[in-house]
Length: 339
Image (cartoon, rainbow, N blue to C red; front, side, top):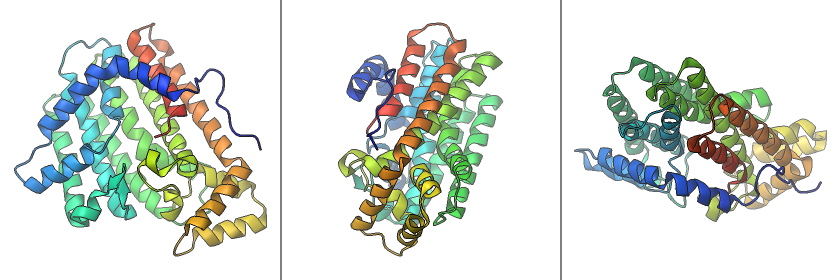
């Protein structure tokens, strides 16, 4: 099968898109970093050390940035947006700490995972601190609607973690079940960041729903691309070993599609590898070859493209605006990113 090519409306040069986006958001990223640094301290030294380890490991700050951009698109012009925005980075960081414990991860963003340094109990408790700190910061805004959106999102995220655990080591997971997991684990928080930004910016109900939908589809596309990178990426780019999903017993869409289309002999071999106690590098290469040959990568990327298109269409309700253009380019960048 020919290698997959992004459609013509997406620039293949991710660095060009990245530079254009960064030129517009540089000052916002500086504000976000300063606010994270201001709120990350605790009277308990271990909390600050572990929190700084996960926060300083090269995250994109996508969620706080989307909250700020969404509020700006809806007319907000003040500076109180940044403190609320970092709530989403704290929740994201807490979920990463908990994920790494559950998955027995050894690396995160090209450095040792926190649990390999400080142990599981301490890392879980620091994750709990970050969750609690997030809600403490949110309460200061005296907006019950924002608290409702945030509470709903974190509840669904917890459900997503449990659902993923239930599906662990299960090659019978179908596409619908997989999409339910990634919606709860990834898309829900991105969607909430956009929706809270809309609420904070004084959006109409229609504008709030539009930004919620934008975040929802962007989050699904982000995870779909992430799942293809686990087969096509490089350890230096990803900051973690390729093939991590298979080693952790996670059947993602490229593999789900491959199994659906595979002959019985191929399904049998995939099952043997997937359920083995240890998956060796040569086993992963064998699975990757099957996935590539089946069209699993192409199928997953086509699905990501569809969600990016839906995300951008959700913004049609808003008039032309530099912030709208930035949100559109962020959606395009999701498709061609390498990390």
